[in-house]
Length: 223
Image 1: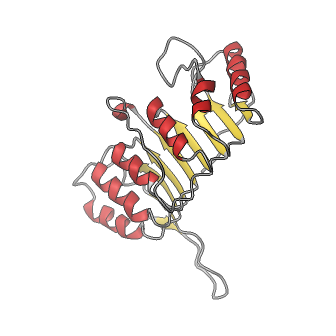
Image 2: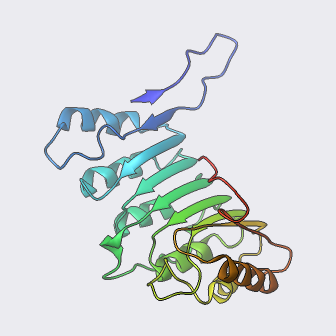
């Protein structure tokens, strides 16, 4: 359920890691004993990955809440509003990978400010969050976020995030005063529109390193 090396007497225990890919895809009522054990093991975890939220929302929410006091690196997939609010409340979280789906589209949540005692994200990778939810997430971490990976397209006929005509305005409104690196991950884009989009972002956020994952051959950074 989690991996850790056995410490020697002279060493501190290594950070605990947990991957719940073998449980997250099971519906409520399935593998209940293993899920209960995972909830116990989540306490004290520093890195938690493959939390697929939509299949068993109540269990995945409790898992996030159990891990909240200590988790520093987190991967959540298909979260719903309660999951995102639980993530926002994690006081030590530094690196977050979030991949949404259309489950948030009907009523996109706006997350608000960080609660007291939260130090803020340093690194964030986002795919398929609604625009309003993404903006609120960026605004919540505007004072600390240094690196952002964002899957977004260039101007086109598709809906957000496959198309975006005003990425520079969106990011400019977020007040990202600590941001120093932005990587745009692509599904739908043209090279000409990409160059124009990157130039507009650089003009709106001077000093920011802005890269295209495809044009600049930048691989996604691991969590």
